[in-house]
Image (tube, rainbow, N blue to C red):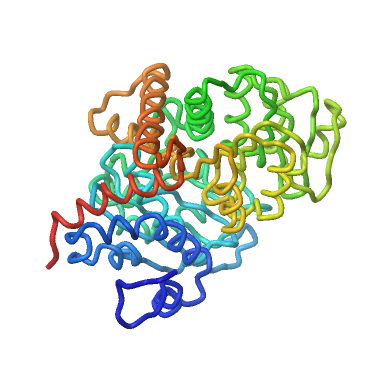
Length: 449
């Protein structure tokens, strides 16, 4: 990509290779967004004079620390912990923590970069952040996970607070882990504050937080379809993943009359042509929560077909929802979806489509929505949880669901406003430009020094 904002580099790729070497996920995220926002920067002297792009291509703060903890056998293991406080121009840093062996600076910077724009789209005062550890909770005992969370918070507590940085959960950090982390924070600081979201409702958590991301994906999808005089009802839907996002997206899609025919995990894909019912979805949640084992046992319980080692993208359907992890849907899979007549692809995970896949989907005559818009429901309800914690007044599930509906409607509207060209909507462009404008305006108005 031609790059004129730095006199020392001939291209954006050269700039990133120099400033952030060996960080492919981060490079991918920045290049994809920059393609849409560079014309906006070029048109606004204030953005260029404030060097807004360079300030968005570098996190404001990146904290790395060791996490020594004790196993059940008494041995000491050491993991790496991180918190990337990416941009706080419009509010306290906000973004999840993930515990997974793949966690590294590149992935966390890409997630923090994307989170900055996603949070801006919600309309709530939240900056972007991300964090976690390369700790792998799989195979660990309950006591080991609790000790690790306590050890992790021994350092993290120095860098977070309700007006500074409010982490949430992410991959392998669910309600259990948030509870352990909050308990450690309270014991260390002697403060009961809304410093984490995704908490249990008995100690400050919000109703609907677990469902929010998956439900929000379907609310956004339905807005896209309604804009074309269509709807979710009767559509065949393929979904990847079997965690909260995937299963709650499946649940809401079924409630609205769709036929969800796949879920998946790292071992393969279940294909149920009859469609998943609520009982089947509940079984998947329980099975994964209790054993973490392969979904292959679903076929014994309910029928259908198990595709070992395969993703869902070869199954013919009207709608595809990648809800598992980053870069799970590549260019070849995108072409298969297009060949099979898929009419809409909506990202439930963060950057689940590779650059090649995104290019193929954006070039095709189908509906395609990026995660920063479509999966913003989770962080939106996290923002509502922050508000509830500040006022000490919890809201009902119906109140939160109504607010979530409105936020996803507003995100869709602003994506349409910023992304419509020649009568067609480029949702990726719309999301990138709308999120960028809000953050960039705040950066310019706050000055430097």
